[in-house]
Image (tube, rainbow over all chains, first blue to last red; front, side, top):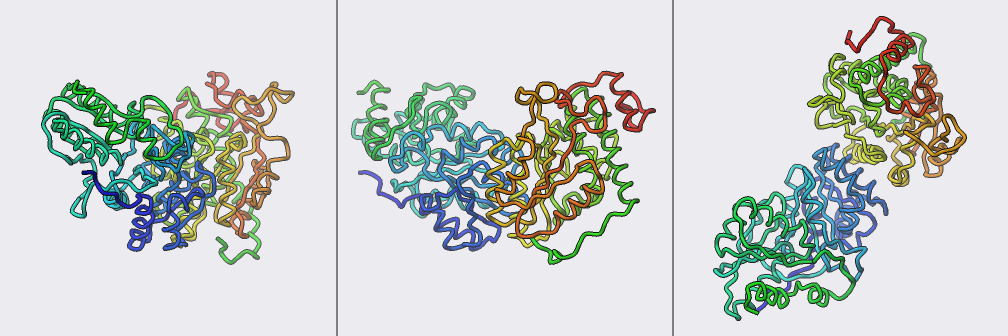
Length: 314
Length: 301
């Protein structure tokens, strides 16, 4: 039994920010010429006067966003993750994080699902980079439901934040009763044998993996960690204590992202045997989504297989 | 944003106004040299080349309220060449934003006067800067934000000519003209030197950061109205700043021809005074040349 498919998070992005702008005249959308891909074009159709094309010039876009924020506007900055995080990183650091500018960095094309673009467009370390930047908070929604709620939270949050948006339709984890709580992790499956911690759109695949593990007699506890910074230390320690064995799973390099963050927390608060599943210090090639998940060990079946190996039950 | 008075000619500044601004510029130079000498750190060449421009801006042109630094309808000013921070701090202190004595905390731990401007510490700074090329983007955001929120304000930004080597400057130049932001003014402190520079047959074996005579053309090619002036001739400075306030549908670039280290003879035109500690005898000479022969050892008046 696998989780159903949800809607593409990028469409939720365009629709939700447009809806927020219906209510709040301070919201503007900045785009570096990829609105038809990120679906910032949905916002443009609803609010043409508040859609701000910045051209293929991402460094300037970040600075303009900071300037707009000082004028009382709430800029959502949209491009591909790679061109929002690493290319204009110094502008994000100096003009947005160091000033506390009320800028929402909400790029699309997070993770490996980028329409077969290859390694120039597939950023493997955005969570690590944004997490370590003082003054920046980092959120990776699991599905369309949580993306909508996280974007609504971002608009109400005063200060810089990073919310990563995924291009393609992914599995839906949450129903309409779900309430996103910034800075909180959420147990999405109760179990006794091993604790799996995941973030972003990897979590639904980990829930599926837990079902496969159940069929092999392993009862997995699954903690979804949508906020990478600030990290929910209490929930992570509690989930580790629950089984005494932790495996992190992320569509991201295992260096410095969820796995790195959990290692820091457990090392300080509750030393626990930890294994990290994710990209092993590598870039990602282009290819169909399902094949990439398989190649890089992030499909439900591949996650289950690696957890069994870690537990010595393979 | 045109204010509808584009056909009127700015009034010629009177002699008393010019004398007042020249004295403000002199005092900016005095206080910045004193502060850098006291801190044993900081930059000199750039702040000295910008002093006359800063005096005209802070003592005449900018619509500001030093006792209400967050006034929403103030003009915005960003010192994109953030390494000249002490020149800006001196102008702000003399204009009444904070006590002149505080200039001697420049660069010190816990000071509001950080080596490069930090807007989270000092009220009156409209943006942090220091990483070159960024201030013009933030100023563009302010000009665009003013239009979107219906505020009749102007965003001013000062860049270095060396800073114009940064790619972001030209990203902003491209985008600002697309938005016809005639409430945006970029002042380029064209002092013809950068920290070190390319080797060549210029002064001290270095060549200027921009090919001589080409800077104005670059801005014009990006769709900006370009004005040029001698950045040390106060009547000319005031005239060009007033002219820049008259929008014509394009952002305005003022290429201000200046001399790095202006006002201290042994610093003028030498790249190595970009940043360098002053020796005691050099400090005395500088103060004497700036008309403060009795000042000494960094003591505040």
